Length: 362
Length: 241
Image (cartoon, rainbow over all chains, first blue to last red; front, top):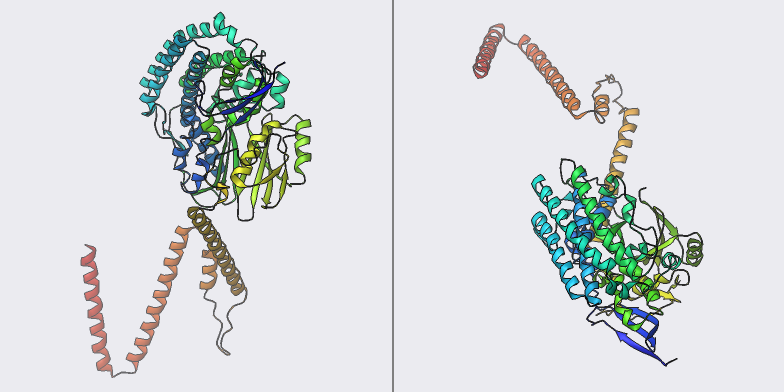
C-alpha cells in the first residue's frame, strides 16, 4: 500500500468542458476519495430577476446554459405561468415539446462526442458532432438561432412551425436515425469502448436512491425518475411514455441510456408532429404575480430533473427566481462513483454524469 | 400522473426531525433555496415522492440563528448548504463537506442579501399599491354602509312641511348595483321627468302672472308667445329634415 497523495484535478483539464475542481486522494493508482468543488464561474443570474421583469427574464434564463437553453426558458415560463394562473394554447405546448426534445437529441449527441473524445476515439467524436449539426440546422430554420432560440415567452411561444417545415423536420430526423444507429453500434458494441466503460464507476440502485440522483445518471442505476412522466404541458398528450432505464449502474449503462434516449426523443417529436392541433401559439399575459405568491415546478432537462421556484412581490419584477440544476444534485453521486476507481478512469466517470457547471453556478 | 406542489411551514427546531422522517419514509431530497426578505432569510427545503413535491418553508431566519445541516440524512445537500451559506450568509452548522465560506469565488460577501435600488423601488411600489387598494376598498365599504344607513333613515323635514316621497333616493340606491345600460336608461327617464315637472311649474307661474295683468296686454303677450312657439316648431322641423 502506497502513501496517500492528493491530486488536484481541474478546473482546467482537457477532458472538462467546464471548470470543475476535484481533490483526488489517491493511493498508488487508486482513488480513495474525491471532493468536488465548484464556484469558479458564478455569475449571479438569479439576482438579475430584480432588474428584469418577468418577460425580460426569459432571455436571462436561456443564457444560463448553452446546451439546455431551451429547457431553461421553458421551465422558467411554465413556472411563471403556473404562478399567474395562465393557460397556454395547446399548439404552444406541442411546439415546446418538439423543441425541447430536439434539444435533448443535440445535447446527448454532443455528450456522446465528448465521451468518445475522452476515451480517445477521435473519429467517433467527429461523427457525433457532424450529426448534431443537422439538429442545429433544424433549430436555425425554425427559430433563427442555433444555440439561443428566444422562442418561448410567458403565455406561449413567439414562432410557429408550418406543415412544410414539419415535413422537413421528419425527413431530417429519419436521416439522422439511420446514421445514428451506426454510431450506437460503435458505442454499444465496440470492444475498445466497452473496455473503457463496462464495470467502471459503478453506482448501485440503493446508492442512487439514497443520494437522490437524477437524470440518465440515476436511470442507469435502475431508478425510475423522469419528470416527463408527470405530464407537464405537452408531455401529458403522449400516448405512452416509459423512461429508458438500465440496471447495470456503470459508465456503459449511462452511455446506453443516453444513446437510447436519443431514439426515444425522435419518436416523441414524430408523435407530436402527427398530433399537433391547429390554433393560436400564445395568449396575452397581463398583470403581475401577486405579492407573496409562490410556485415550484420540475422539468426534465437533457441532464436530468431541474427544479424551478418563483415568488412574486406584486410588481412585474419577481421577488425570487431559483433554478436547481441536475448537476448540483448529482455531485454527491459522482464523488461516490469516483471512490475506489482507477485514476485513469476519473475523466470517464466525471463525463458520464454530464456535468454542466454553468447551470450549477448560474 | 400530474405534479402536485405543496408549501408547508417548518421551524428551525423541527428541521432535523423532518429530514429524518422524510428519509425514513422514502422521500427524495430535491433542493434548498433561500429568499432574502425584510424580516430575515426564508429557507425552503424541497422533497419529492412520486408526483408530490413538498416545499417546507422556514420563515425569517435571523443572521445570528444557527441552522442544523441535513447532510447526515441527505449527503447531496452539502452543495446547497454551502451555497446558502456563501450567498446568503446563513449559519449552517455540521455540513458533511464544509467549504467554510470558500465554495463560491465571490467578489463580495453574501451578495444575495444586498437589496438593490430596483428591488427596493419594486417593494415600495408594491407596498403603495397594496395600501392604495386597501384604502379604496375601505372607502367603498364606508360609502356603501353610509348609503344603507341613509336609506333606512330619511332626512328629517322642516316642521309642518309635508313629506312627499320622490322615490329618487330609492332609485339611486337601486341603481348602484344594476346593469350599466339599465342605469343609463333609468337616469335618462329620471332627467326627463324632472324636466317635465320644471316646465309644468313654469307654465303655472306664467298663467298666474298673466291673470293679474291688463287683459289687452295679456292678449299681446299670449300672441307673442304663440308666435315664438310656432317659430321654434318650424325651426325644429327644418332641422329634422
